[in-house]
Image (tube, helix red, strand yellow):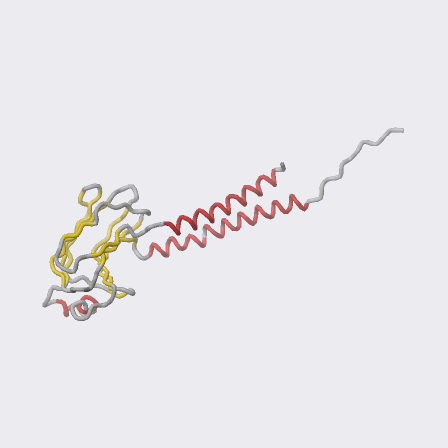
Length: 203
């Protein structure tokens, strides 16, 4: 077997393997370790232990499926003075890593925004796959009865742009590798065989 043939087969194998593995990994990657319902009354919430899949900046959000008339208006308003005279959302949160307190915070009337749903950021942390985390939240005041909020922990929104950008590097390189291998195979296959020289008979 010629050296070009071996290299060509190797390049094709590497290229297709990279494409298949990357697509399978992205399609099966769970980047939202926590997505749980939150009681719409003052209560204590614990996520239990969870792990993360990728090292990145993770955000802790409270999300409402749709704008809630009345109380939530002041959380969405650019004019924060509308919330000064009342407490519509007040809570404390703690983040543990391997049962060690890593971060904590107290939130009162956070600035929320619309992104298909109402998103109220509570905090963030640098997540590491090797560690096990737990988040405890104490809801002190909650003025959104019947709003069905959820606690979401997931990578910061730029994560999807950053990892999506791997398409522009990994797949083109893998395709180029495969094409290069095919060209080598074609050269080997189409190259005319060298004529066999037979020794002439001496008369």
